[in-house]
Amino acid sequence: MSDVLNLVLFSGTADKLHAAATLAAGAAAMERPVNVLVQYWALDAFRSSRIESDLGLSFDATVEGTKRPVKGTKSIAWLEAFRMAKELGEMTIYACTGSMDTLGIDFASLDPIVDAEAGVATFLMAAGDGQIVFI
Image 1: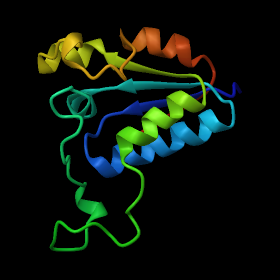
Image 2: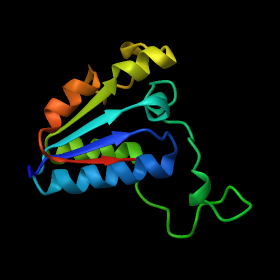
Image 3: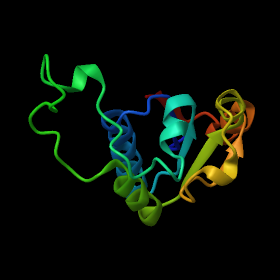
């Protein structure tokens, strides 16, 4: 198996984006290349107009009956963790072209942290035989 870490991001909530960014930064720090395919609601979170917004938490990341995060979830913001991963090593963030079409998102509206547009086939070619984690 290749040492490349490949992440497919579907969720646009801050807790899921943070988990992905933490994995990416850890792999980059270990000199493992990282490919990230951003789809659907995660892609929406990478729009320049939304990337600094409070994206909320998924239901299972909150204290029951509230919108307060579970204790211990304070840490580096997800966007900063992705930026750190890019500084630490080789990481490419791809915007899923199918998701862009479905949501009507133009590549120019995405934050510059997103490197390129790619379809699933392009992402899978970059992934090679490396592990793929879906978040």
